[in-house]
Length: 150
Image 1 (tube, rainbow, N blue to C red):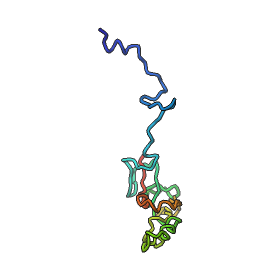
Image 2: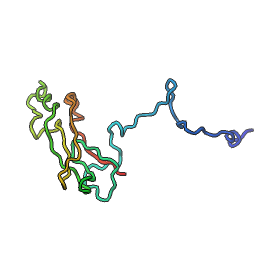
Image 3: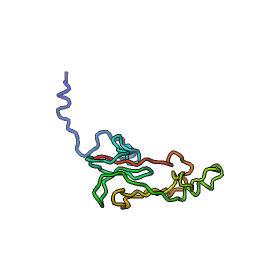
Image 4: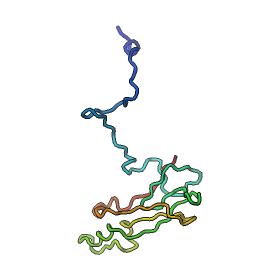
């Protein structure tokens, strides 16, 4: 009777081959990375100055974002300025959006967002909404900014 130790004694895993890949027509397939597709990681920082927390990356979107300014070196939360986009003009012209004009400053969810450092006033990032098709996708009208700690 063979024991488990004796059957696995001569087995040695090959190096450089993924452990559990799924082979699809001669190629290995890996599940897509949800964080690369825009989903925020579970340890993301959404608000508040990141004092003492080193940041790996900041995703600047529709809301103020925590970041370390390269110009002045401060750990702050960005200030926002908005400008109308093509998507906001398209939303005003669509018949089913009558009565709601996205060109008003209070309806800036479809506007371009520009992030500035509140300490030195330097422009650090911009989030443009160039796709006019975003008008028919309300889930993407407002996307939160976040930072990923190192």
